[in-house]
Length: 183
Image (cartoon, rainbow, N blue to C red):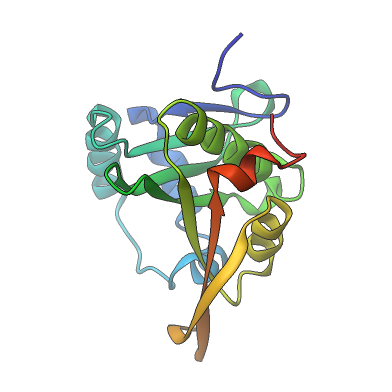
């Protein structure tokens, strides 16, 4: 049994060969708007160098960048943990699933694996995520996972000619332990 594998996905580390995948993901301007803002074009050479550095990064301060693989080992997205505060027992994560792989349960399983590891193996007591108000899929995902909306910062993101709020969602280890979605 592989801790990092569930029914639909497997989490793995970044490999240098993922650079072309990252370059393809960077071309989806609408996905970028949901996560942050529309990024300017980045050269494949820059992405390759950054990916090689990411592939060699150690697992330090409990922060990590995982590739989400779907069936047949296809990279469908990523999930990264940062920042992690051991003394307070809190961590955050960010998640991305490529547009054509959405609505298949990949994000749900990837998040559940990360929550299981950080709560059950590393003894963290709370996870917090920030979600832009224009990212309805992420809001639905986190509410399904049992995250509670803990606050909203108004007009924190500007993209596509509009301002959007940022919502903060939290999930404690105790709440997660009572969730029917645990894997």
